[in-house]
Image (cartoon, rainbow, N blue to C red; front, side):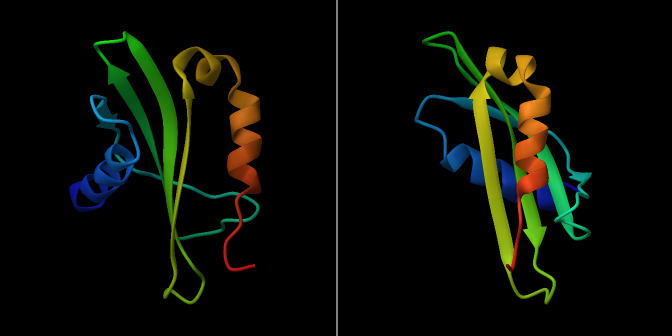
Length: 100
């Protein structure tokens, strides 16, 4: 799983502003109405110690049905909003579609 986590950690870190420390959890299998297989989710936290700011989010990696397409999604918010709105975030993840 470290072989998958490291590239996703780089994907998340590359999309954060400079100065943010990023911690990416290990992958979990993801299945939804639109993503039936070959999809994984990675929860992450990003902290900027100089501004005392914290983001939480989820990165998703999915492989298309023909196995020749790869999709990367990133959803993040302030930690407070992330923790207060789990149903909203879940609706966003459930709506993700690939190879339409």
